[in-house]
Image 1 (cartoon, one colour):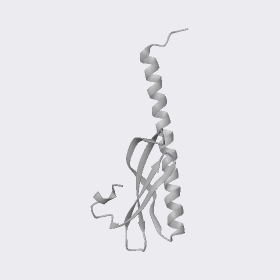
Image 2 (cartoon, one colour; image 1 turned 30 degrees about the horizontal axis):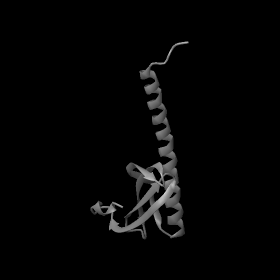
Image 3 (tube, one colour; image 1 turned 90 degrees about the vertical axis):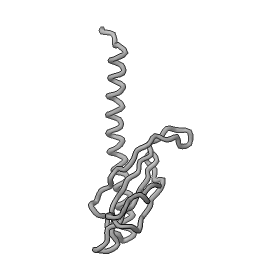
Image 4 (cartoon, helix red, strand yellow; image 1 turned 90 degrees about the horizontal axis):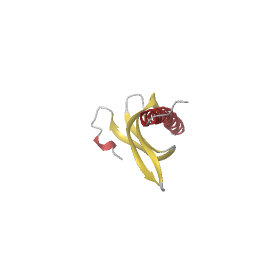
Length: 114
C-alpha cells in the first residue's frame, strides 16, 4: 500500500473543503431564495427575477462556533413601476437580518451595508 505524502493529504483536504463549500453555498442560496419568495408572497410584493445574488461571505464566530455569514441582495417591487433593493443576511442557515430599502436599483448601493 502506498504511503500518502503531506502533499497528497493536503490536496485531498483542499478538494473536500471546496466540494463542501460548493454544496453549502447552493443550500444557503436555496434557503435565501425561499425566505425572500415567501416574504414577498405574504407581503404582496413582487419578487423580481426570482433569485438572490450573493454580495459577501465572511467567516465569523457565532455563539462559540465558526459560521459563514452571507449577505444576499434581491430586487422587489411594490408596483409595476418600481424596482427596489432588499438585503437578506444568513448566519449559517438562519436568517439574521432582512432589510427592505426605499431606494431604486439605479441609485448607489452604499446604504446596503448591514
